[in-house]
Image (cartoon, one colour):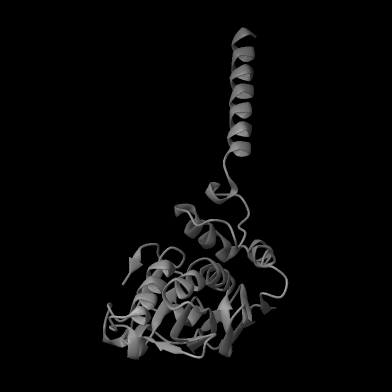
Length: 232
């Protein structure tokens, strides 16, 4: 009986300690706390985004933390638009605080990562280097039922599951257009902005590929959700 009481006491102390830990840790550092779009970015952020790949309700709840009027998107039912490439937990992005050259289908965590990136890294970089906000983003699309690099054999691309977005250029509020093809190597504010935009994306997306990666990405950023570290 004495041993049982000791075990129960230890369990109670452990539960109390865990409760205190749960209450004390900030939400943006807590690996299981719901994600909000304006949570400061930490090493835990990518982990939380990955967990939402199989949590439709949790991902949509996180998107619901975007301030009113700053996002227009439509949740989609799971479907298979092309044989061999089923999509689940996806949304259609119509616009955020920027417009897009075309709406696109995105895995919900990709849409969430984009909105967080836009608010916390892209716009600050544009203001810091170009003294103007981004108002439109040109992209090459998200979903494409294909293998990597369009090869006949090999593993499926992230685009086959709508887990990647290819971004080519940014339009600024003051009328300027900054493109990767024209300005990546520019030794001016436009080049500095693009490089900071790339570095900021690496804090949210699982992999970020651009002109420094290979010739196939000379004219766009590939923002993908798989992995945790690839940043080129």
